[in-house]
Image (cartoon, rainbow over all chains, first blue to last red; front, side, top):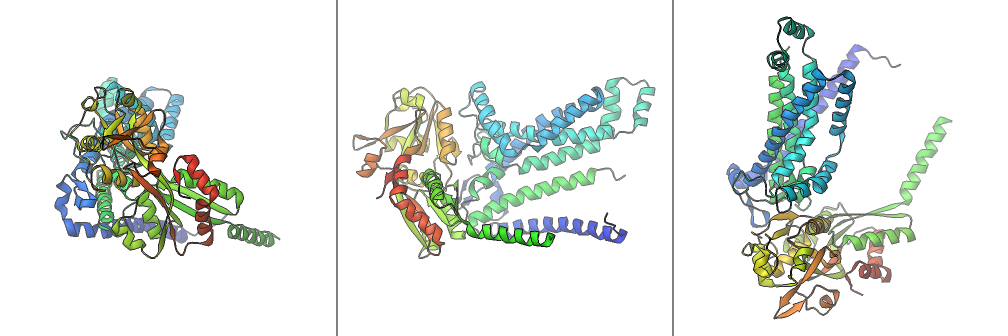
Length: 286
Length: 273
């Protein structure tokens, strides 16, 4: 058995921590450094232009940003209620055996590679959407949102379940002693007490949803054009990640096109960092 | 004792690593079936040479050779001026086969009577001026217009011949696809799709239609590629850096030799030798 002096352990911990911080800094610096060429030439206003034709030097970000926002919004609208409901059922209603099974299935769901979700979308979801909603091919922001919702569900559910189980037993007992019925217990005591944990889960899920590439790329249609009208989620569209995935291979390192794709990455990274920081900030300090 | 075992195993590992030579081939999914079949055969004959083949499209193949991440690139189009400037003098561009880019439609469209279109009609479909199959004598259904990623070789050839410029916009596009595989899947699943596909990828559900040139119907066949009458013909290239390892050069020679050219024919392309 290896014996560690406390000071050695502390230095290992510090080393690990600094490595993590260093990689994040390098990553952001790399993105910024490569995207800089693009912003230098086109400025920040290109984010609001809606035409993306790299060969014509037109780099409008609006369609992909809109697509990313819609896909994420749809995913959250579905995954938050479902995840929360699953967490409540598993932590408050069913027996501990069932609870373990539900948890296990969620963990399995979280471990499936994203390309598998993409293929499920391609072979099951798209034909279904095509026939049921009478769409051209089924490729759409709706399809991307539905697949994403399945992918972020485990994060939301597992975090919410942990948060609910973390509510102090005294609080539950007090609620029962006051004669509160189940609805009141849930809405007045459990959910408010667990809310910080639930919120962190949602914010983590946002990060995952923003960055997902493979599954989205397979079902979104990759058509780099503003949805007409802008709330049309039933037509093929484009997201930032899917654009990077489709075009990165061809863009020569150091070219303007490459730099523009790095700018897409930078935007995603900044938004993700912003959400992560909010998740940290909103966590209770105790 | 432990040390000896450790040392010898490291030596053994080192020697096996040394014996095998790896060649990585990247690029066009049109050229890919030929190269991957040839690679399998070549590996059987030369077990110490391991060839990995992956897709990504012509643009990716050319970029990989420029950046040195692959030993051999595959492209189903000519290089652009910009790419050529980077390749000039450093990379040999070798044509291993010829092929037709077919204008492919879903089976249902073909069955409803669309067997041929003029260049103008196809252009109008891709520009968004014709939106329903009924306007060109087919069934009453909105046309699913499949465009390809801008870097793809098939798109360059198609856009140049149909729309007049290899980077032309296709305003009528309703969806963007990547590899031949992906495009074939979308067309075969749809009842109203049109797309661009190498003629070797046509099948019962994905039908190639003829192109009307000066009043004559020219179908996308190898014969029409051979007599230069088909307007969407192209060469299939491999890109071999001049400083490429011996094994890579030998493999390209294999592609051009009898066995390689037989595979070209079997896949459905026109051999060059």
